[in-house]
Image (cartoon, rainbow, N blue to C red; front, side):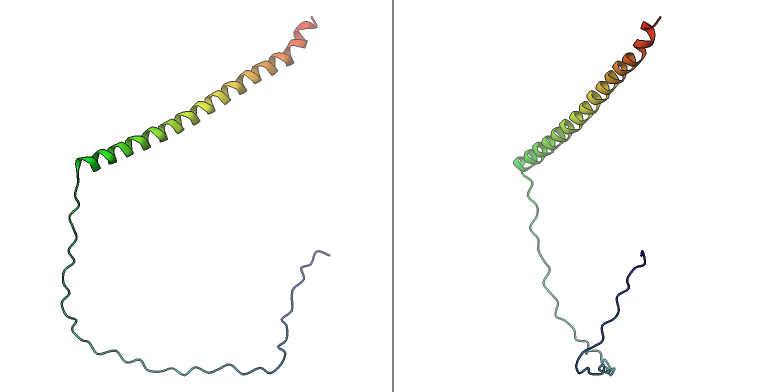
Length: 104
């Protein structure tokens, strides 16, 4: 009942050709030629302006403020949740122990 069913290989239908035999061939290296000297690549120097420095500093400050706000809000949410769970535990404990005190 719980044995897996193993599929069988289907038999080929029609005319089948034998596999082709690949003959190895010799590989001859290409003759070495001297390439002409390439012109050096000239890259423009990076221009740092006061405006670009101010933009980078402003973007970095914004990223730090956003990440800090998100982390502080997550920490606050965790603290509020822990406090509410603690209050619920105290209330449930007092409800469970109060009938025992009233029986005296």
